[in-house]
Length: 243
Image 1 (cartoon, rainbow, N blue to C red):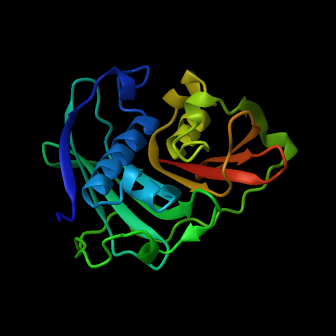
Image 2: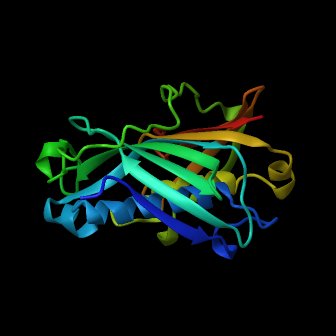
């Protein structure tokens, strides 16, 4: 069993923005789709996990952006899992063009029981815990401990979760949060950004029909974004660090 997966991808419209450049959600899509494909090869893909009444969920993700590819560029996407923990698993990603590193990423994953909502141990669902991981690590450093609070003056908009946002776990897909949050910016605001890093923490699942409140605040570090559920619980927080 190979401990990494690498593929070439040519970038066209679906993953690009208004200027023909790879958008942040498109980068997340590239990384997550390749992770799903490797999970299939590791026998912990969708059907395998359903056999254990489980599905994968992202706990938090960080991506660092060095250069942004654009329309028609052929890029090489690579993913590999780190050494699994008792419950959580690291997964790493790189995006390159002609050998040049364009972006890198790291996600912390866990498996959740479909019926009970309980987070499962890696030993409970057939994860290949004996597979030797690649020594390479990217996006090093501790994940951010988010402390943002939903202050009324930072409320920017509301968003109703709809069917296009829902994944096989029957809750809002992790990349759907990124699309929603980035969609809260105008084109003019996006044009003014020189994004160096994006980090998102998923805290509470959102489901179809929920009306979410989106909060935004800007400081010298970048943009701080928070998603609040109707019951007041914080669903996710993201920071966009700018150069």
